[in-house]
Image 1 (cartoon, rainbow, N blue to C red):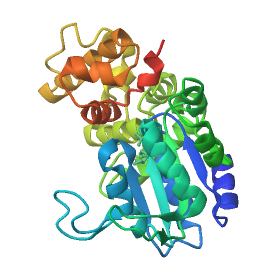
Image 2: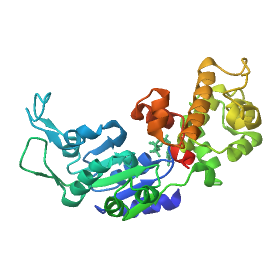
Image 3: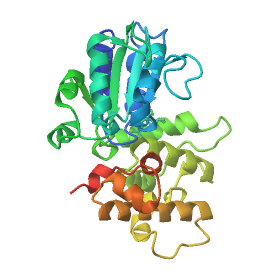
Image 4: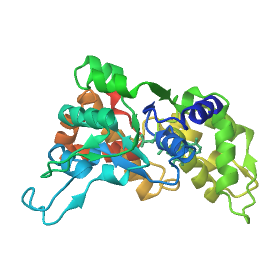
Amino acid sequence: MLEVMVIVDRVAPSNTSVLITGESGTGKEVIARAIHNRSSRAENRLQIIDCTAIPESLFESALFGHVKGAFTGAVKDQAGQLKAADGGTAFFDELGELPLTSQSKLLRVIQEQTFTPVGEDKPIQVDTRFICATNRDLQAEVHAGRFRQDLFYRLAVIHIELPPLRQRGDDIVLLAEHFLQQLRSNESLVGGFSEGAIQCIKRYRWPGNIRELRNVVERSITLARGEQIEVDDLPAAVGNPSQSQNEGDQGFDLAEVSRDEALDTADHAYLTRLLEKHHGVIASAARQAGLSRQGMNKLLKRHGIDADEYRK
Ligand SMILES: Nc1ncnc2c1ncn2[C@@H]1O[C@H](COP(=O)(O)OP(=O)(O)OP(=O)(O)O)[C@@H](O)[C@H]1O
């Protein structure tokens, strides 16, 4: 993390575009905020643009804005999200989900720093820094023809790769201790982790990365009865992985598991099996589950599941 923060400090003052990659929950947005906050743009806005939330047909209108009467339903002039980022930073989250046609429009804006609202004929000039994040391997997406090579090269001038938590060695325990200090209330007796709990925390694979670790620490503080967080205070998947390995299709210990937790676990198992069947293709998995692609993306994010791991 220290090395990442050194890069953040170095790139923050420049206007260069930055690409941040890493699995869900590794802290891409946290890093984007750190870059913005340490730049001369910090007093202006960090506009977060969730690429999964913009339907392809509304990309220009959402980003560039539109004038009254530009299309049915355009009842008044509406500024787009890029106008809000003027003088500040535009953070494109989940960039890998952007369709090819939208990618070419984005490339033009990044290169020219201008865009034209729908129904307008004069372009607007902006001064915006672009930071993009994705949990996809964009180089592989380029090879597969799903991501524009020119946009990739334009963005990857500065490429920050955030490793999954399971590859961060002793950082895992340091982060767990950091969250414990940050999240415990002043009245809380809990001051640390038992040796057994630390071993479990080190061993677990943390598919949801730092987000999952933070949630686990928060939950364990609430459940802990003594001065330490014990193995029993950790969720079964972390504290007792062999027992929870077959979760989802095996019986639950009703004394240990709430209905919400049981449903969550079953949902997780359903989603991973669905992705296995559909080889990580979100669109077809979503179709079988009767969900929109966006809905499926949200669900996968909540469960810390990376569809790419199921690609074949
Ligand atoms: N360096 C960090 N220090 C402290 N907490 C962190 C750090 N990185 C991430 N977190 C915690 O993890 C959570 C998830 O981080 P963030 O939203 O930045 O991940 P992400 O990689 O953008 O995830 P996603 O791809 O799912 O959007 C944050 O809300 C924060 O609680």
